[in-house]
Image (cartoon, rainbow, N blue to C red; front, side, top):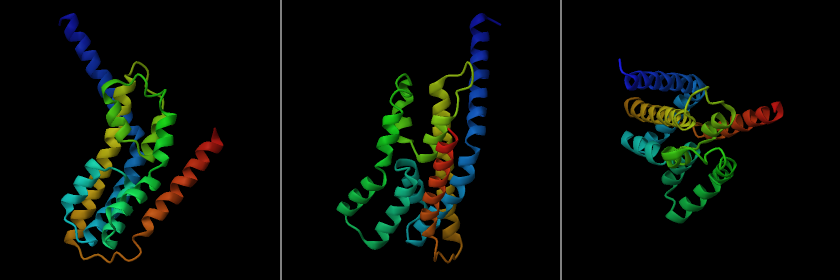
Length: 196
């Protein structure tokens, strides 16, 4: 085998190891995003929307709490102004996340726009607390974490919407999921900050 072939093989092994490490790192997010995404899918279906909208929103909007809010606003017949103000206020915290990651993302390369788009509370927590494996590419590792989290959310929301369209579910009290999400995130953030 040529030297170039050996280097390519070594690079492939490092990439595979990075992906496996990111996969292990994101398991807690998987365990949270699947049921939360399903709850979103159930609510979207309950509001009368086809499952394809769960896929489109989760792919292009990817803002869990914002998506829950959007379902409530759509069901209430809210106008564009209400959507813009409510979404801005709800997701304002992401600007602070972004500011705290300026240095960390300074040398990230081509994946930077996607990492900015995919910055959720959970992804932020992983990016700020997880060390990049030795000899691994920081940009690839961060990309794998963000993309896996995104995939989990899409999978959960589409699965919930499809399941909701097949089953006759009683969604009374399901809106509490958003409140529960914020309580869990607040508690998690408190314990993370008190440990440091």
